Length: 50
Ligand SMILES: [Zn+2]
Image (tube, rainbow, N blue to C red; front, side):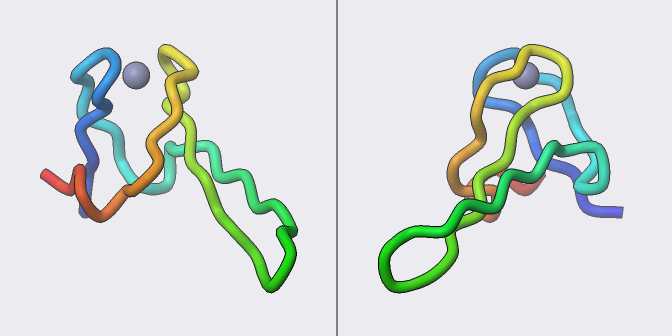
């Protein structure tokens, strides 16, 4: 099970625990994720894969 390290609080968060936020932008979609613990945004999940 892949996990990401939150850059804000350093917790290890399972991918399915992240709060995904898909927004429509001009030209497509953008998905951002938030830490369920500290509400910090995790912009590039792939960069934080543990
Ligand atoms: Zn966090």
